[in-house]
Every structure is written in C-alpha cells, then in structure tokens.
Length: 247
Ligand SMILES: Nc1nc2c(ncn2[C@@H]2O[C@H](COP(=O)(O)OP(=O)(O)OP(=O)(O)O)[C@@H](O)[C@H]2O)c(=O)[nH]1
Ligand SMILES: [Mg+2]
Image (tube, rainbow, N blue to C red; front, side, top):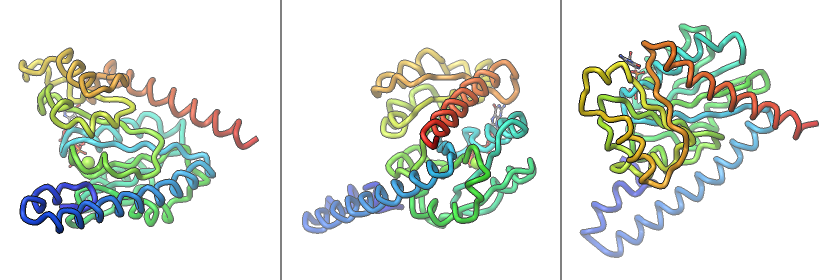
C-alpha cells in the first residue's frame, strides 16, 4: 500500500525501467523526509523527558493486550499515554482509555504503517511534560512499520506462538529492528506443539539480532513479570539519564 517502503516499487519495476527509477527516487525522498521529522519528534520527546516505545508485530499477536496488562500493573508508578495506529476504528484506543490512560488513535485509512509526520501531528494532543512513557502501537504488519522511524527510543517486537517460530528469518527487516523480542501467548505452547522456543530464538539471532528475548503470557503472572522487570529497568534508566542531562 505504501510507496515509501518500496512494497509497490518491485511490482511496478518489471514494467518500465524509467518508472522504476522514479519510484525508487520517490521512496528515498519519502524516507529522507520521514527521517528529518523523526529527528524533530525525538528532540521533542527528549526535551520533555519522555521515553517512547514503539510496539510492532503482525495483527493480533497481542500488542494492545500487552499494553492493557502493563498499564493495569504499572499505572500507579509511572505516567503513561498511548498512541494507537490502525487502518480503521478507535477500538484499541478505547481499550486503553478504559484503564484511565490518555490514548489517541491514528486511523491510517489505507496506510500500512505509522510515519513520523502522523506521530508529529498526534503528539500535539498529549501533555508531554506530564508523561514518563509514551507507547506507540504501530499498525499490525510485519514489514513496512520497521522502515519508518517515528522518533522512538525503543522498538519492542512481538512474535506470538500461533504465528510459528520461523517468522524472524522470513521478516528480517522487522526483527532486526528489535531492542527486545517478546514471544507472546506462551500459554499456547501446550497446544501449538510445532512452536519451539529455542528455534524461534535461533531464527531471531540468525537475522543478526542479539537483543534479549522474553517469553510472555497475559495468563501467567510469572511470565508477565519478566517483561515488567525489563520494562521498569529501561524506564528507570532512561529517566535517570535524562534527569542527569538536564541538570
Ligand atoms: N491466550 C492468550 N491470548 C492472548 C494473549 N495476548 C493476547 N491475547 C488475545 O489475542 C487477541 C489479539 O490481541 P490484541 O492485543 O488485540 O492484538 P494486537 O496485536 O493488538 O492486534 P492489532 O491491533 O489488530 O494488530 C485478543 O483476543 C487477546 O485477548 C495471551 O498472552 N494469551
Ligand atoms: Mg491492537
């Protein structure tokens, strides 16, 4: 659906070389402009001491559910807000609002990813000075979202058990962008016998990523606590580094 990540250019390229060059140039131009806006977004987040975490994965792998459970458990410790991205509906923003958290929804229409410009417009609706963490839930898609920097500090990539353990090597651009990979819905491991956690980690490492891997289930406190420990550690580190820089 997008010209920026090149997903249209391959198809068009077989028809006409001149047109292909135009499309490739256009894609580079879009990415260059996106990078400039992302830099401005990041400067704004840093000026307000806000840690921004971008969640990416295929549709239905558990991004919103992970956020709901995380907010329920940590909302008394940190000030959170959430920016939701989907093609249509306010469903995910409404799920977050039920937890008393400020959420904004971006409806991309036909857009298969969020871009820095969309985020730049939406963050005007947040009171950044009062926030510790802004989560961005990107459009469910294992390809294009990874090609567009939004100005975030961290990328959390989810791989759910029912999707299969070979996805990192099949979608390397996405998984290479990960600061952490969460294997979600691990309560399904008893039913999806084909999913092998060590094979998923090997597949993840094969794309050149040695980022940490955590197993998570919203049905299992012990497995969820590993994610909370990781998250609180990166939030605390970020906030203390930013405070030092602003002294
Ligand atoms: N059993 C089980 N179900 C889960 C878990 N996490 C999420 N789900 C369910 O999986 C379904 C999809 O979860 P969502 O959180 O909506 O997935 P998503 O990644 O936000 O989906 P999109 O926003 O459409 O990309 C929902 O029915 C969740 O309740 C889990 O750990 N275990
Ligand atoms: Mg969602």
